[in-house]
Length: 181
Image 1: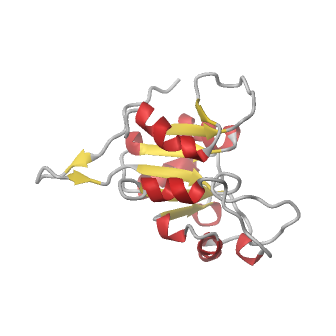
Image 2: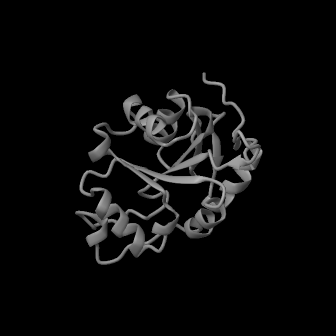
Image 3: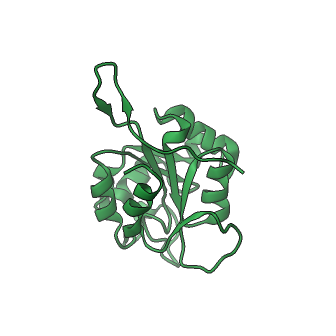
């Protein structure tokens, strides 16, 4: 089992804090709702919805965290993902997008998460993955040595030591509890 190190900012040579932490959110059903019956790129759906609390949590975290999105979406490229995020009113908070179409691997492949580590500008121990799918988001991130928070209301005993929240609004508190304020 991987042992997580506390999250935190890093100091520059001048002694000032840098924003060197990254929260990587899953897209579908973590930040934006996958609407049953809608197919094709989310940007072209008749309507889009953010998950409850998503905008508030992103606004709260964005001043001190790099915010990224990680998705296996096969029907949307980065431009279409940005368009869907804009329709949902949360595009301004997303600093980076890691789409399986561009990365060349899908979650939970270790290569997907290693791509994030190599490109996000943060040390591995400064990256927090947040998602609703245990196998793809949480187990994949943890296997790559990353922190992870599982957004679930399911009574699932697969991993009793996984950090869990039932609602995105609980994320800032979970980050504080993990030592990352």
